[in-house]
Amino acid sequence: MIHTRKEALPTPQSMKFAVRRALRSTLLELGSGTKAELSERLGISFPTVSKVMELMVQEGEVNLLGQDESSGGRRANRYAFNPDYMLGLAVYYEKEQSVYTVFNWNGDLLERKAEDGILHRGPEALASQMANWTRRYPEIRSIAVGMPAAVRDGLIFHVPSYGTFQDYNLQSYLEDLFSIPVIVENDMNAAVLGYHNLSGSEEASLVYVYLGHNGPGAGLLINGNVVRGRSFFTGEISFVPMSEGSNFQDILERNRSVMSSLIEPDQEQIDALSRLSAAFAAILNPDAILWCEHNLSPSALVSIKERASAYVPERHLPEMLLRDWEHDYLAGLQRIALDMMISDTSAM
Image (cartoon, rainbow, N blue to C red; front, side, top):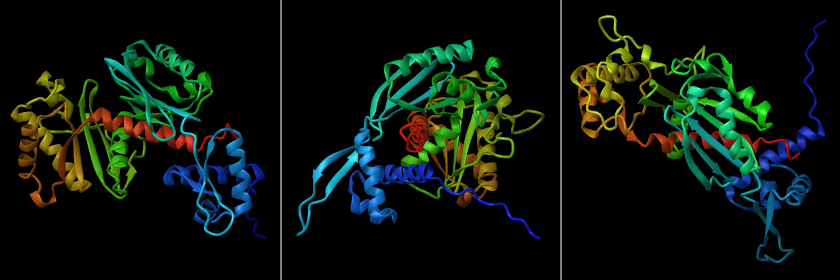
């Protein structure tokens, strides 16, 4: 006799949440809708849509905008999200500063502020600084945290510059402290996700390279999906071997100006950057390699691409672009926080 595992049947509560989540996503996409429009678009019965929508109106999540013009019958009510019903907090931590942004359902920025860098002081100092924001904005229902570290499911496992965070589950710590859903993400994964979301190219393959204060790193996205790797170590490009026993970070650090704004790398560094670009081209064949505009000058980028063509035929090299790293980074964190808001169950 063959025994098969029985799948758990959906409960009324889980079905109601699934409908609510679908309505959130669709209203965010469309901007507004009638119950009939939403029912048809989602393939969910009109009575079910109507019941859940009325609950969302009662709780203040959805506003009644008014009634559509009559087409001969009863005029339909049109609904839209209350954009301030739930807020998101996106924050990234760097050596010299902590940058906080608060935004609403529509992605409208309500506040942005740079505060003192506190990574060197450890998790408790980070949480203390964050608590000021959760107190000021009690409507915050999701928190996306960007860290200059390798992260696996909220656990920070590779962070050479800040030992107090090593092997520390920052996500669990913050969720227990604030009772708010939290995602902790690697900085470059968030940046490449943010650029991808802003560009609107769903199937793009991208590499985003950062040569920052905490050492070089990269975010990789293939066919629209962030690549994390077997042990979530993808993008730790400081370890890429170069020549004569040196790795990529060794060569960058031979000229400390690599950490300054709009650098002009020396020839050895140009060669290292071009070898890295050629490796990405040969292994991943991405659409573009994105570089932080505060790391490289336009002329340096031209030199890197010219040198890379000595290693890989030019027609196979990706487009190379200078980007506003903070803009893309925060866009990625905000996207992550918005996705958590859509999945929020606390209002159920």
